[in-house]
Image (cartoon, rainbow, N blue to C red; front, side, top):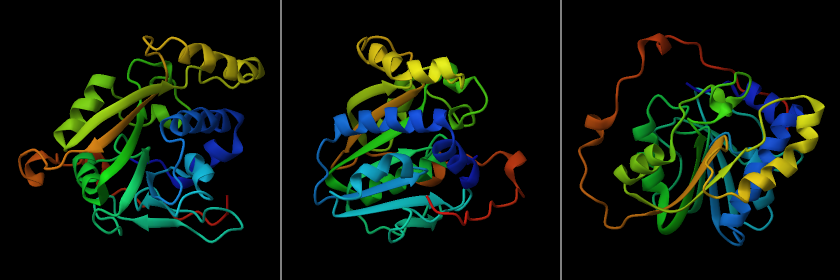
Length: 250
């Protein structure tokens, strides 16, 4: 179940903790993809905090936001590149995406299998995708108050198995958010140092976010039909009101 776009905007753009999260994730993405010049970059979920550095070098940047989450104008004072869409039907041409990022995407969806089908469809044969999901074993997935405690957490093995099932081959993986999800000033000031220590211990998977880069398997492995692998949404979500689009600009 997706968080409302207004709650995500408040966390990432209005809190020191959220800005620290965005910085830590962006740093890892830039290490995986140091150059996106003249490439088509698409994000799905709530990816604007990590897409901003790509606006200038990339040929095109699109921030897809699922209808159940809502949409906001982004970026501020520039032409809008955010698009409201159905999570299982993206307004993107098949095979046209060079770089794809999902943040609060498959872990928040009631139809993660269908979302992954769209990921496979839009990614080019030579393209790469990054999936960012909550780490099941971390404090971030258990402590309320952040988007990482709201959605479905994974272990590294679980997320890689799911991606392989849908025709993706993991190429690299990283972790981030070794800093604790606490807002006190001491922890915010110590956050950069804690992140550096965590990154220096690659065998330690204690970070709050798992980051997996994949490439597309071509030809695609044979799998059951999509209708056989999508589970029915939980009944508790039926009839839930749709969030309104945010009107302020970031």
